[in-house]
Image (cartoon, rainbow, N blue to C red; front, top):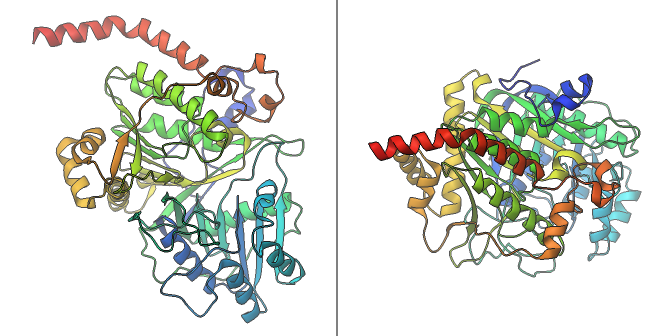
Amino acid sequence: MVSLALGDVEAPGMKERAAGEERAARRPFWRTAQATRASVVIDADDYFAAARSAMLKAERRILLIGWDFDARIRFAGAEQDAGPPTVGAFLTWLVKRNPELHVHILRWDVGALKTLFHGRTLLTILRWIRHPQIHLKLDRHHPVAASHHQKIVVIDDCMAFCGGIDMTRGRWDTRAHGDHAPRRVEPNGKPHGPWHDAAMALEGPVARALGDVGRERWNAAGGRPLEAIDGRSDCWPETLRADFIDVPVGISRTLPHLDDQEPVHEIEALYVALIARARRMIYAESQYFASRRVAEAIARRLQEPDGPEVVIVNPTTADGWLEPVAMDTARARLVAALRECDPYRRFRVYHPFTASGAPIYVHAKITIIDDRVIRVGSSNFNNRSLRLDTECDVTIDAAAAVKSVEAASVIAGIRDGLIAEHLGVHRTMVSAQLAQTGSLIETITALQTAGRSLRDYRLPELSSLGEWLADTKLLDPEGPDEMFEPLSRRTSLLFHLRHRHGAFKRRSAPKLASRSDRASQA
């Protein structure tokens, strides 16, 4: 067993927990395993191509686990192989040409209702149900109003993908995020907006470990037990360049409490550990920013004179019809509170835009700590991801790699590449500016433009409905138990942050005054 440098960390409220729960709460990884090769894949154009290439090499099993799945989406680009272009037809073609291959598809049961009657989806599902080599299950092993949110692909236990990208409509885009992209359309031909996402490709023992995650979910959903597959060693897509060679990878999960299931909060512990470990900078991309626990961990670091910068890239607004009211309001209130806890002005939230000013929807779930640690997965900075939904993340720690200096350089390059993508500049410009300033915030400020760029988040005016939804956490509860608590008994979203901020002001006011006096004397 490989051990990563991240150890147990103290999570909020730990002293009030039982001893066994304390140990579980501090554990950021379920398992660590070696990756012979690993690569961070940005945006669905590259991801679909890599996943399709790996599936072409499958001999015995393809395990697809996702929040959503749409058989109608175009799965192949201009460099199309011999198989059909759409994902549903492609999977059917794969098993037809190989009688030994079985495809197992697991998706969230509630989400399935949204696409069941889209186009020819129902007909495809009926064909799959009758097919002896294709097995479809709906995951209903979750609390009421929770979701199965993991996004995992495993090929023959030798190659796996883990991240935030679902094989469904509305996801395809390139890193250019052009204003006019012919392939960025729904299955019915209607254009959809620019979309930013990420996943990690992994080869070696870690793929089998992710296969174990998938098999556990398959069994929990009522599927027949699946055995691990031995003997495969090369499912890596030929066109995918490896970012890392021979590195340990940590796997972290969220599993909610059920009568037959103990809760797992490894991702929550991971976030707290990563934020606590940062020395100079925290760079994160997330669909939401609504987690009180994450905000508390950030607040503690912002209050340190020599703490890290914190840069979060979010979409301008949450996707959906009710989510924007709840999630955007929760974000506004947390950002406002964190700005009050930020005496050294080291906290920023940004949104990416195209050259014409269209907002790019951020669905990626990435956290990069300095040039040392990178985490990619399905979890967001919201309460559901930490306590209620099922999630799976993977982490690479340069300190645990055999070639740690090389791994650290790669992590820094991935971070600079992401910032460059959002700013519409070459990565070398970001790296050079960052080397000169030593600051993510100053680098972004220096390279911001009126067109393709990152724009600063601005606090909105909050509606009474939004404030109520945020405070009650009705759409983003901190676990299954809170869903059934009377609203009057729920902990306010800002209660702990306000408490901590007040204590900080009392402790640090004299120190800050003395620093100001010294500055004025100088």
